[in-house]
Image (cartoon, helix red, strand yellow):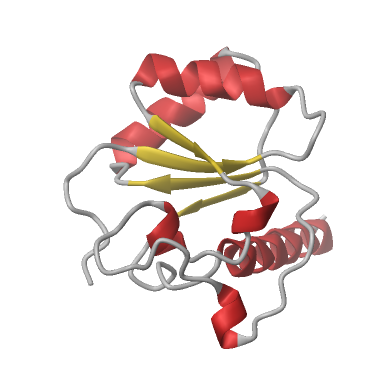
Length: 140
């Protein structure tokens, strides 16, 4: 199943309650013409494919069907779809210029992860982020 179809750029975004970063980020995305889909706790078990509206994915294709455990997400998560490398760079620069606090957990929808639940992606990129920090600290 092809993930990128040349369609409009979209960001899946989850922000814990009370996060002041959300308004600044959404302003950046609106100025760039990027669609924003806020992910709610009820959607943590939904696949990335269903969240971005890919053909062939059920509206609520969820991890519950596979028995995957879904817990709480305590950090911001930003998932990009249909972004070129240049547009990712533009987004990151625009976020810095708008003083959006760094979002550590960022990902791109790929052929490999389109079937993952939002929660599974969160776990994977969270673990990867921790490994990078451990490696960086070990080198110091």
